[in-house]
Amino acid sequence: MVKEYSRRDELIQVAIDLFAAHGYAGTSIRDIANTTGHSVSNVYHYFENKEALWLAILEHSASGIPERLKKAAQVSGEPIERFTRMLHTHLREAVKHQREAKIFFIDEDRLSRKGKKINQRTQREFLNLYKEQLLVLQNNGAIQSNNLSILAFNILGIINWHLRWQNKIRNMSKQAVREEIVGFILRGMGVGQVDQ
Image (cartoon, rainbow, N blue to C red; front, side):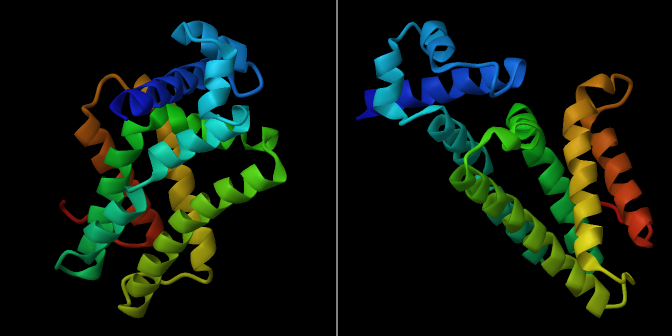
């Protein structure tokens, strides 16, 4: 059974590399098979088609992150401190799956209707989590917003663009970059920087 998981995991890792480098449309099952040294039929043994492999990457990278964000937001402290902790957690976790994030946001239009629904459900989970925490902040008077959805979209947009460009920032540590982004988000929400 361990061998079964290892081969499947290897295919996922190679697909992540190829999708990130060449895009979903620019990568074929044959490319994945050739890179791993396996046959095309071997790839199909594990994944029904290329989209099934793409969705396995989504599950591989996104699973667990919402739960870690919820835990960060539930630790004791003032609401803004908990929200700040959640932002730091999200930025740290997202960097671990930077290549996958690029795939999900750039290549979504290549998916079937079913694939798009699965991808959107995952994205909606993140959006709803942020909206819940923003509502807590709003109810505690920490922020004022006419539309929490738009505020959440903006926050997620900042996090996603950070993933796309963070390797270009060479004169700052990752921690300093996170602090700068969190500070920018909090100021944009109308609150001051809170130490993490």
